[in-house]
Image 1 (cartoon, rainbow, N blue to C red):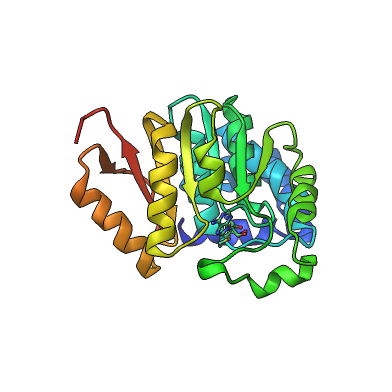
Image 2 (cartoon, protein in one colour):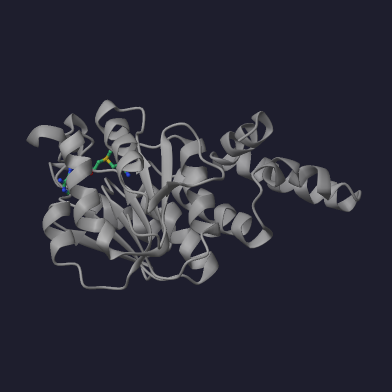
Length: 255
Ligand SMILES: C[S@@+](CC[C@H](N)C(=O)[O-])C[C@H]1O[C@@H](n2cnc3c(N)ncnc32)[C@H](O)[C@@H]1O
């Protein structure tokens, strides 16, 4: 995202900023300069209905005291990938925390009339090596209520279903629609990413997208690099991928 896009996003995160942008938009439309107002979002290369989805989402979630672990440019990258990925099926997020990323993914799926978003998590703030995120204590050690509240605030409760449990156990019994979009953002150790990939990738439809978050973490990068070297069915996805969000496509070519 360019500087203009980032400024625009930061402005719209606050109630006052959002109102100011609304008034500016009205004024610019009156004097026939609306196009220049759209420029920052055009820079994100999103179509009108995808932008509209975001404009409805932001006031709902960013004016509240919502929590999340992903910075704006990465959320927008995910949104853009989820909106534009042309394959049908379910969207699955491994590691949902309190639902910020889930809200973006679900809005993208709603905008495009895609299937459900399944959010898989222990909802206990599980971290690598059985430790827990210190911030989970803010939620009394159980993040499911905060997750559900966030999903309601985002207005996507019909689009989202939490699947509670360890990602490998949930993946082993997954029998829902084939997956069009899989986000792996749970246990970031090499073993954790390997396990998640091995359990979940068979459920991914051909042409589906698998997104690894936190590619800057050693375990994630080591596994992704190993995967690309050793299995020719998976190819690095071209397109709008920012540092830390790494996407591969499942192709039909046998390894
Ligand atoms: C980095 S946070 C996810 C952040 C979220 N995607 C966001 O950007 O807001 C990791 C989440 O994965 C969950 N998690 C970690 N290891 C897990 C496992 N093996 N099974 C299920 N959930 C796990 C944690 O409970 C935590 O909520």
